[in-house]
Length: 105
Length: 105
Length: 105
Length: 105
Image 1 (spheres, each protein chain N blue to C red):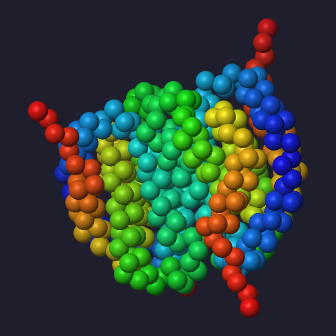
Image 2 (tube, one colour):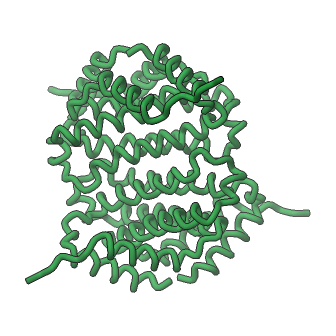
Image 3 (cartoon, one colour):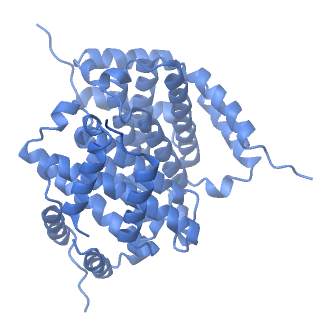
């Protein structure tokens, strides 16, 4: 996935609709959270087991909500000047320190 | 960003910690929403203008929360069998239909 | 507001629809968060100033979402055995310690 | 629970700390969602069954998060001019129409 190219497309998409004034990081963070909750709604009454066996309709719906979250996430990183790939590598390194692997004997 | 490679790394990370039983799509969707709200918290008392001018500490914090959301998002797609890049392209096409660009004369 | 009476009504409402198996505290917490995000959605593209001047339609919509959040909140407290009024008093006391009032001279 | 009295106490609490400029309905809706997600976090890795058997520490923590959500909810209603008790009765009536009870024969 070419993150910079996607961020460029999203900037152009917003500009063609005069959406720039609305797209502050604050508002985009709200929109991303709203989309995360729409994704959560898919699972709210499912058992953990049912959540492992989605049907095609549920999987397509899930794909839409995952995309919505990701598209806002890319816009937040872009508008706030965060290098997402560098941030992910740093977070993975932090997680590895915070949660050491189990030792197997 | 190589999504498949990241998803592989996250699967290995979870396996080395015996986290697999917890990682149902239902639980991962909850965890992603929790991280989205931690990102939201950065902005909750800022004005829209202040959200456009984060300092270095805020930007680093934002990068961590964006990464947390993204890492759970990649795991949900992986565990639920969603092809994320295809889903994103489909969603961008749907958005272009749902929100036509302004006509400029 | 008579909290116990409302909790009783919500229990009866669920029982008449055979919803009890779905109403674990885990699922109710997901549902409450989904409703909180629907409330958030009302405000996502408004300026702070616009959020202070809702029109009648927006205020009625807000009333519905506030009610949805509150009804799930009451059910979580009920199903998890939390005495909500006691918890609120304890939290207000903690907040007063955590955030001392400004001294005016 | 005396809602009006609680809303008065919360107004006074905010005034004594000069918090009023931050307390727009938009910001309060963000804060309420953040607190809802903190509550969700308690349950994210629990099974549905475990969520039914919280220990004393978990129940005390849950009581704090329920209170945080409720206190922001009361402030949103207050600042946006929503009569919460009337809104709840209206929503309960709507829910009864939307979800008719099962007929038992």
